[in-house]
Image (tube, rainbow, N blue to C red):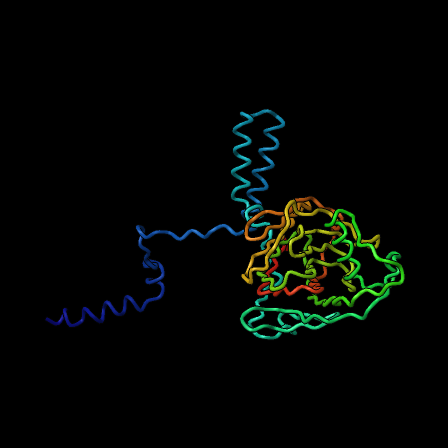
Length: 314
C-alpha cells in the first residue's frame, strides 16, 4: 500500500526535471491534420509568370516544342496574370456625393460658374448667363474662354465643319457661360473612368476628361451634346483637335441614370461605352505622362453626375 502512495510523488519528480522533459518529450502534432499552404503573393505570381513567359519565348525561338502548344501555354499565363485580368488595380477617385459636400474627400474646386449637390441625384451645375456679344464674323480671339473655344470646335466638327452664318456687326443673344469644376488627383496614363449621369434638358454641352498641368488646359475631353455624336477631343498647346466622333448620335434626355465608361490601356487604346454600348474605340498616344486630375465642364446643359469612380494602372 505504501508504494502506491509514493507513486504520484515519483511521477511529479520526473516531470519536474527539465533535462528529462526536454530530451524525451516534444509538442505533439496530428500527422493526419491538413497542412495550411500559404497562397502565393502577387509578387511571387508576377515573377512566376514572367519567368514562364521568358521560357516560352526562348522555346519559340529555338523551335523546341509545337508552336500551337507554346501559344496555348502563353495564353494560359496571360489568363492568370493579374496585370492582364485587371489592368487598373488602384482606386484613385470614388465619389457619390452622398455626403452633400464636394469640398473634401475628394475635394472639387470650381473654376467658373456654380455647382450644387442635388440630394439623391448628385452634382449639378447652375447655368450662368453670359453677356451679349457682337458677332463680327471673325475667328475666336486668343483671350476667349478656353472651355467655350473647346465646345465651339467640337460642335463645328459634329456639324461636319459647317458654321452658323451671321451678318457682321449684329448682336447675338446671350449664351450660358461654362460652369467648370475639377478635382486634382495623380492619375496614371492608363485608367478606367466610370460615371453615372442623367440628362434633364436637350440643350448645351457637357464635357469631362483627364487633364495635365495646373491650369487644366491640356488633356482629353469627351463631350456630350443631346442628339449629336459623342465627341472625343485632344487639347494641347497647339489647340483643340477632334480625335473621333461616335458613328451615331446619342440622346439621354429620359431623366434616367445612365452609365458612361471610358477606358484607356497602357498602349493608348481608348474605349467609350454608354450603358455597355460601345461608341468610340480609338488609339490616342498624344499624352504619355500621368494626368493631374479630372475636369467637368457644363455649358447650357443640365447633366447631373450621380457617381464617379476612377481606377488606374498604379
